[in-house]
Image (cartoon, rainbow, N blue to C red; front, side, top):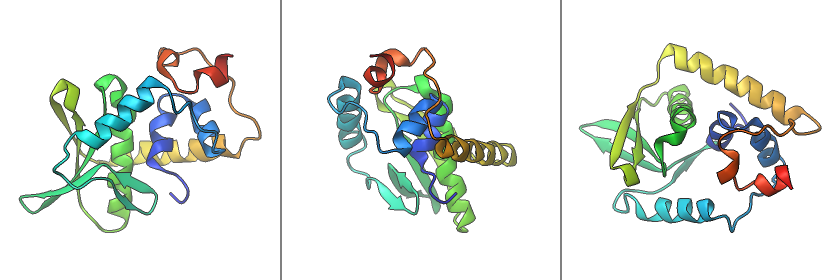
Length: 164
């Protein structure tokens, strides 16, 4: 998984063009209100738990121990991106598994007052491995994938870059 991050996994399931842009350190609009809200939510939600544990290519929002079991949580603003959030968290769990660390996952949506359990299994591992292969292919391209109008474009911090 060398060089692949959870953020690449997240964007792969939303917009593959964003994966290429991020791989080139092309930064999205930092003044975008969705970016601001995401930063605020990240700082304020679950403030009593340990924040952002970084290890290898992963940055986990929170890591706790519950009844002797390691729980990795990913905090998201909304469940609208459930598939990408799930796969990002599974990537973290898979990275830990490769290192011999067993953990379970939990997606947290504080605005919705909701938690979603996430468990790594063989089918999801295979899907992650294919996603990583595809991400490497996207990153290796000399030009980004062509922009495609999708439902997420209106709230994307890269929208000016793609549609100006």
